[in-house]
Image (cartoon, rainbow, N blue to C red):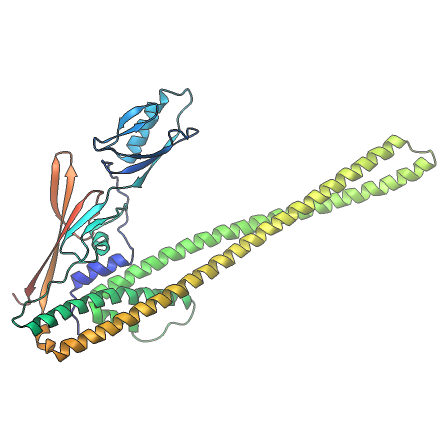
Length: 404
C-alpha cells in the first residue's frame, strides 16, 4: 500500500541526503549580511562588520563605504583601493561572508520560518529545512472518516521519514562491508523504499546516497594520501639522518685513530701539541654532530610514527562514527516501522481501506519573492532553482482526485 506521492517524497527525502546542485553563483551583499574583513598586518581593522540598513559598513581610516549590491569580490577590491591611499606598501585584503541573511519559507510547509542560507541552497533543500510540504488531506462527512484521514497524513509523514533513513543505512552498511561479494537478486532495501515512495523516488534516493558516498570516499582518499605523503617524507628524513650518522661515525673513527697515533708520536716528541689539540677538537665536534643526527633521526621517526598513528586513528574514528550512526538509524527505523504498523492497523480497523481508494493527485508550486533594485520580483520556480540570501519561498500544495 502506498500513500505518498512522488513529488512530496522527492521534496522531503532528497534534500535529507545533503546533495545540492553544483555550480558556483555570485551573490550580492545586502543589509543584514555580516562580513569578515582581514587586512594583512592590520589587526585593528581586521574584524567582522554587519552591513547596515543604509547598505554601508564603517571601517577605521576609510570611514563609511558602500557594500550593498556588490559581490564580496568587488567589495574586497573597493576596500583595498580605499586603504591603499593610507599606506605606501600594497594592501593585502581578504573578505569572507560570515553570515548571509536568511531565507524565509512560508505557505504549506510543516515548519514555516527563517532558515540559514548557504551558497548552493536550492528550493528542495530549503523545503527540507522547513520539514517538507504539508500533505493535503481529503475531507469526510463523519468523525471517524476525519480521524482516518488524519492518520493517513501521519502515515505519509512516517513513510517520508523512513525512506531516506533506509537509504542512509544501506550506504553505511555498504561502507562497513566494502570488498565483500555482492548478494544476488533484488536489493531488499531498494524494494522496501520502492514500496514506500515509488520506484522513481527510490532510485533518486539511492543515487543521492551514492553521490554522497563517492564524495566521502574521495575525501578519505585525499586525506589518506596526505598522511601517506607525511609518512614517506618522515621516513626519507629518518633515512637521511641515519646515513649522516654513518658518515659522521666513519669520520669520527678516522679522527680518533689519527688522534691516538699523534698522541703516541707526541710522547716520543715526534708530533706537536697543537696538532693533537686540533684532532681532539675535531673529534669533539664530530661527536656533537653525531649526537645531533641521532636526535634528528629519532624526531623524524616519531613524526613518521605519528603519521601512521594518525591514519589508524582516522580509520578507527570513522568506523566508530559509522557504528554509532548505524545504531541511531536502527533505533529511528524501528520506531518509525512501529508507528507505520500502528497507523495501518488503525486505518484498516476503522474502514480506511475504502477511503484510501479515493486517491489524490498532489501538485506543489514554488514561488520565490526576491528584492531587486527596482522592488520585489515574484517568480514561479522549480525544485532545483538556486535561492539567494533574503529570498522568500512560498510553497503551495493543491490536491485533486485521480481521473479529473
